[in-house]
Length: 152
Image (cartoon, rainbow, N blue to C red):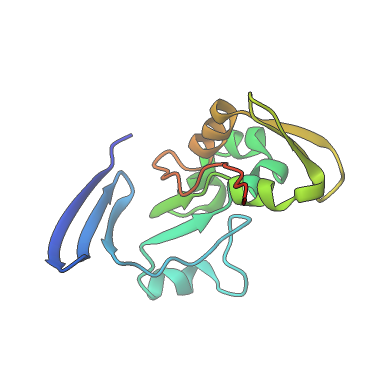
């Protein structure tokens, strides 16, 4: 898995660049359509390709619950499952887990949570969350981490 970010130009704190992935280059800043469950609702893939979409965002939490790690793995990872040849970014799933306030319990080892779909119990450790992200998109970027904030 090889990722590289190349800065093209700077202006103050702003910058433009290129993210180079095994599935293509992504010019930044970039508009990234959200394919929560491995598809962008209401937009056919050929339209996304015609529009020049360089990267899609998938959601680890939702893909972990449905269709699941093994199903996606058996179909060639998220690229194979989606039939999407370009770059994919998956998030950590942390936001969704932490937004399930009444359905989760935080431990030193990770977080236990109940599915919002069927109430089944699941556990994410840092290692298992990373494994799910790698399964989803071999050239993933972690976009968040699980951290509970305590306000005083």
